[in-house]
Length: 157
Image (cartoon, rainbow, N blue to C red; front, side, top):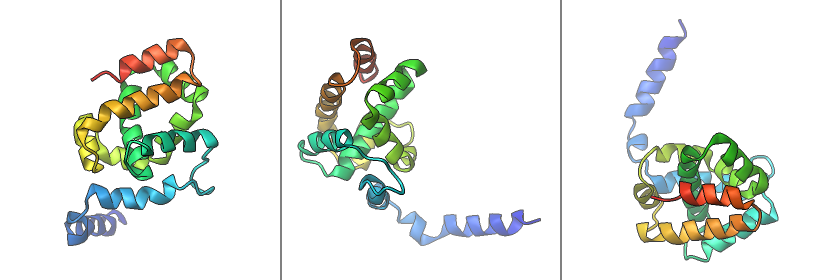
């Protein structure tokens, strides 16, 4: 009956004031080591850095850039055929790497709207369109026209 201590511990943790003070900013700070490209957690490439640099040029931090991209790509994944999304991440591995490196953060964002996901990341919703444009522009360098068409359709609100 080792379940009881685990349940009690989990209950205590859920009721703690530390968890009630949790916010998306703290979570993204915790995810920063994942986004820094440390070999133990992520495999970054020049392409990853190029995409994050392009997104950061929009006036956001690299953490916000990765989180925003992951939020949009997660939504696109839900709308694309699995084979299309697999082709997207195979042809442009940086897109898959960004999603994988921020998977814990992205899962906490839930299935809410892109506007609320961006707000949780501290990014104004007006930045969604420039993020989409940057992701599509990046993908066009690596991805076949058929997959670009699927991505553009999936990124529509």
